[in-house]
Figure 1 (cartoon, rainbow, N blue to C red):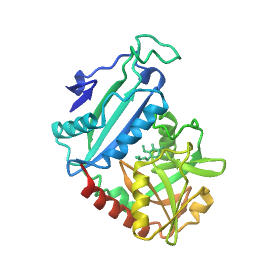
Figure 2 (figure 1 turned 180 degrees about the vertical axis):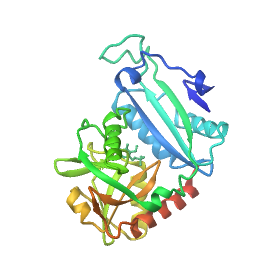
Figure 3 (figure 1 turned 120 degrees about the vertical axis):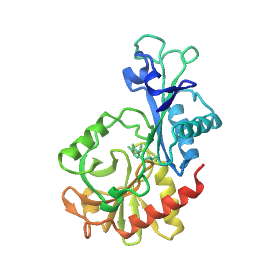
Figure 4 (figure 1 turned 135 degrees about the vertical axis):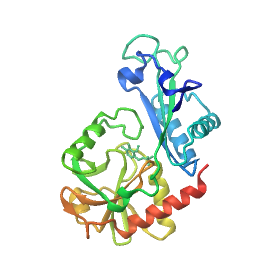
Length: 285
Ligand code: PMP
């Protein structure tokens, strides 16, 4: 695989980053994951905009312009022959060659930027989406700036492991009795023609897929209610699903051992998945 690190395209085993990098020492960095369909980038601008916002919130500079970023994404897709898959991008604060809690001087310290591709045929035609996901709920003990897409992913990783140990696929996190989001996705329930999902705030990541899916849902006359919901309400709903750049719309068929409906992906989630993939294929760059 050819990867990108700080301006260079290199074989993955030749790419290096300093052991003093604050991304490594302090999880001081942000990331984005953009999917590739038909060799093209899905919602590139959405991800580029959120990257800028995350960097801004952490007082980090943007190492590349939108155009440069697009060029690097496209070049990696080309070099690695990706038809369907993901591009991972990470920007960390870099280092001044020492360890200190205070940020290093931004004038003399340049951020580290790394991108690599993941080849994933079957992203669109995903067998897991035909089955639907079985989820557990766990307490949300993350920090309170979840709107910033930082690389502090230890708790979401632990949540994924808790789900695995329970023989399930994923976990939804609950705070003060209400679902915040999934370990790596936004969470929704469906009642009749109504889609219910938590409103945007610092409590959740502002999903790029969420924005697109809610727009498509409105276009086909579904109703959107942005409000909190509980696990009990979700267990009693007609359907549930999650959204993310890497799994698109993923139906949920079981929550904490309670089967939703017939235990198969519901019509709303299936339809939104179809529309999303079709429309994003058309709009991909
Ligand atoms: N919430 C969390 C916690 C996530 O990690 C992700 C995916 N990175 C999402 C939501 C979904 O965001 P997006 O649609 O931009 O992938």
